[in-house]
Length: 514
Image (cartoon, one colour):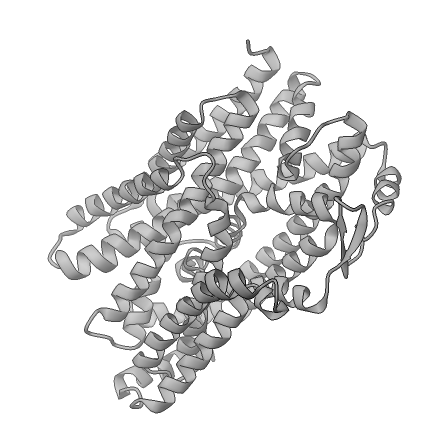
């Protein structure tokens, strides 16, 4: 039997989800063609560009994974991962954003596969197809992980049937994404970033209040060997510090390289209405990322004392924010509404990533595969129908991936990040900054980076990781290096790019100086 507080909490979440659907319905009227649908007609303002990019990037990792990591083993793991992501975020906005925005307008590209194909004037469509396939392969399970998080959230909070929650969560995300396209996804992501921020602030405030101040929180974690160190972690099994090591630090810091190849983040750079406003977007995004990750780590530190004070038997450290929201919801009617906002924040973090990934995967299939190879003469009305149908199809496949509640979809997320970073990151950097890059070099880089990520994770790490320390490093770093080397070597061994290709490059250089 639901109490009044539970009803208020659920009502708050329903209002939030209804608001997301309303945004999708309103913005659907602005989609006149597929360029509007997949890139918002390049009309995003600097605030929406910045906050939607970061919200789509962070996912439930910000509100569940990062605090859980800090709570379980101390701040080292969480700090070095967050530091790498913060540096990667800033550099991506600083050196990639404006140049990609200009380049994609010069060569009329609406998707990342479009950009690669048009950048190298690949008339065969092979580069377009390979890029699109990479996006679909990695984004389907990535999207599934978001649906999985939504289902498990409601299952653990209210005992709702997992599969029913999975379907309802997927339907809500699909409806506002399919209706409004990129503009709806970006606008809802902007709203969701605000909800996520509110959730972080409320949880920190309530956690400190429950622990009777900061001093008890710090005193409690000081008792744990290695917990507050940046060069060691806390091992709960032995109640001792465990050496972190330089190799581990480098491995976690390497997460930042992934940003250069993330389609759902790069698309935001392409969609801003004025490339000169990207400097403002960079500042907003960088500040928000640093503060939000720092607060998320601190929530993990607070969580240790919170669990002790409340006598909570926490089996999964990633559930700390959920447990805090439960306690808040039990206080009074206002607490129930606040708890609803916190849970909505977790949903926001998950949905803001799922919608962007869903749209990126759908654009790759409908525009870069169906339209390019099977239905070249589609009119705009038919293209929009295909676009929305593709969103629904990709979502159905993602639901199938997430159908087993015990599935290891979350394990795939780190690999998907590595896969995108290794397959697209080096190619993106060379395509933007190295005039001598050739089509064959781009092919080689995508192939070498992607394959190295797979081999490193499932062969070298699996069979040699325990014996040879170097193979324990996160696969993104070695795969990125191999991909970059392949591009340089193959480009130098193949024919120089045609004048048409280099003219575009020179034109972009000239525009960058303005």
